[in-house]
Length: 176
Image (cartoon, rainbow, N blue to C red; front, side, top):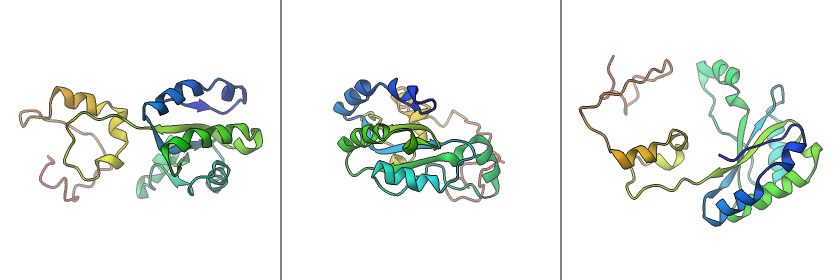
């Protein structure tokens, strides 16, 4: 995922906007800009970043984790925010304009990046929430589906202490 690190300011000049424009021309830039606040920056800063970007109000990328929120904070997941632009072709112009506003507009922002659109294979899963689960692209799941769609002979072990064993999607599919 193309990422620009905003501190120091020189890093903004190193952002490969030409590459991002090519991705946009290929339809691979979505309508969302994501940003990570620097450690110690108030979450209220996300609203002012959203205003500076001139897109929707900021929403956390990783939802509050309840009893596991301390672990989210330790990993910095609570510092990731996203804003939606109205159209995909507007995303890069909003990013350009934000970067051009100068250092003051970027205070407290560690990273900013456009969300990319992953081209799926012709097969799509029957999960109605698949499109909202962006973590699948980060592990290359679509490429794995080109090799196999699964088999009952394969056992997958998930080690996750935060799993909700009473969730209806998992009740019949989890070994305890």
